[in-house]
Amino acid sequence: MDLASLTITNARSAIQERKTTATALAEAHYAKIEKDDPQIGAFLTLSKERALAKADEIDRLAAEGEELPPLAGVPIGIKDVMVMRGVRTTAGSKILGNYIPPYDCTAVARMETAGAVVLGKLNCDEFAMGSSTENSAWRPVRNPHDLSRVPGGSSGGSAAAVAADMAVVTLGSDTGGSIRQPASFCGVVGLMPTYGRVSRYGLIAFASSLDHIGPLTKTVKDTAIVLRTIAGRDPMDSTSAEVPVPDYVAELEKPVRGLKLGVAKEYFGDGLDAEVRSAVEAAIQNLANLGCEIVPVSLPHTKYAIPTYYIVATAEASSNLARYDGVRYGHRARDGRTLSEMYRRSRDQGFGAEVKRRIMLGTYALSAGYYDAYYLKAQKVRTLLAQDFAVAFQKVDAIVTPTSPAAAFKLGEKVDDPLAMYLADIYTVTADLAGIPGISVPCGKTKEKLPIGLQILGKHFDEATILRVATAHEQAA
Ligand code: GLN
Image (cartoon, rainbow, N blue to C red; front, side):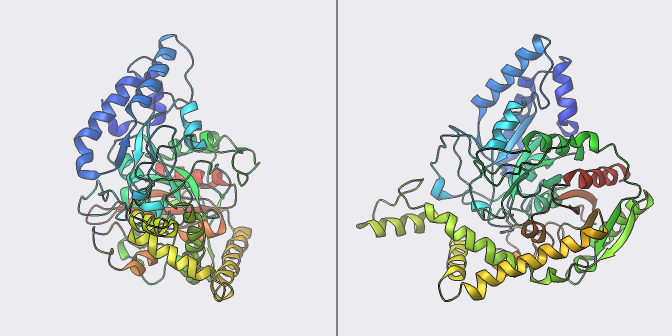
């Protein structure tokens, strides 16, 4: 069985036509995980019992000649920030090292209802804070294209699992780029939907106004299928939007001729690697050759995006992470003599260095004397960043940029320099702050054979257009 060429469509039809079974597909993926994952480190927990029960259910349907659901028998993996009933869910943190959730994340439940087989939980930066997956409390993930390099983060396990053919599809989360940047580093497709498009129910919170769930896949079509499956209003998440969900797969058929694509100079300035620049420029030229009109646009507040993001995100994180007190969830220190000592020690022992750094930054930004100077200011700049996009989208249908200023870096290269790590998020955090959707699609490789990503940003709730541009790019490549 050639796992590398397996997509949702061909996996499902092979099962429907009885050329294989969902059980055989799951077992082939587990064999691949057993063989290759000791080097890569993408999976934290395998949910074999649940996977094989689901596969068996699909195989019975197929044997009875029933029409199979859209994701029937497709082996998938879930970033360990989405809860699954009865399956250990750690968010990459020791503080949740023994946490067994009592309920299912809506996005995961929707995937399973559509027939997907969940192989297990994927490694990530602790509480999704990071850009390299080196902040996992358990172990780092390695990039399948070059084991000395990072897979990106924080959804590094989700990207590496797809790139290494250990899952057909994975779900990740994106707060400041954590789906698109690892997709770009690992040479896969990664989509962050519009804020509110996909329910966050059951997603362990990092920064609630910025958190999104989305797919990582091998093809744009698979991303369209997954988005159609997980999108739409969920009564369990009041921020999930009551907006109709289009048939994204049908939308892919529409031609791109005549679409206006914006190119912002702010995304092609200093710090952009020369090889990444030329690959992205070549992709833009290809889209022009397909009949897209390339329009210069300006996003003048881009230079404030990193400081704005790292204030808003840390402020919200400091508040969300207050719930880990050693009482209600996870790890409890045994050696505290008083209640407050127990709180302090539980948090000290349970959280890693980056999480502590962010809790301190966020608490500072929210504290009485500094709230106006930092948090309030950041919220105002966030509005300006969103307005930049609103103005640009009056002229264009989508905006094309590099996903990341450079290809995958080496493990250890940036761990001692958090600021350098933060600065590399420059092209991705803007979309999270504005609430608009973005996709990263593979666009060539560097001389060292490292994948490069093209990012396509769209209007609120217009995932259909960016998927259409992404497909045209993929087919032209
Ligand atoms: N790299 C960014 C951060 O560290 C983004 C993380 C994310 O999107 N979850 O916060």
